Length: 123
Image (tube, rainbow, N blue to C red; front, side, top):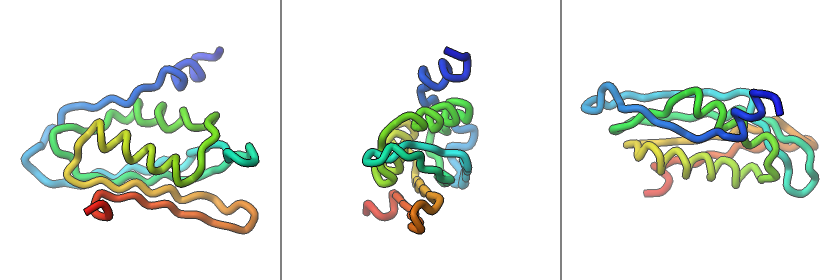
């Protein structure tokens, strides 16, 4: 196993203390090389993951986020399930004031899908 594969296999989301917990500010992260596998066909799906959140006490550590998102590359998981899983894991880890995860999937078979999960939708 190559060192990158090992790092992805052992990936665990980590967080840091928010340096400005008394201030509302927005963190936006784009991950343009997300991949997972279609659970029905096994074909790869490609997407840009867009994360936006207002932190409370914690912020996500970026290298751990990168490795975590790369861990989906060999998983058979639907668009909807992958974005909801990412949302749930980040919300549980960070407990942010607001969080939104968007999966903007590349077209396949002339169909384009965008999945959006937001803490505003939950209310």
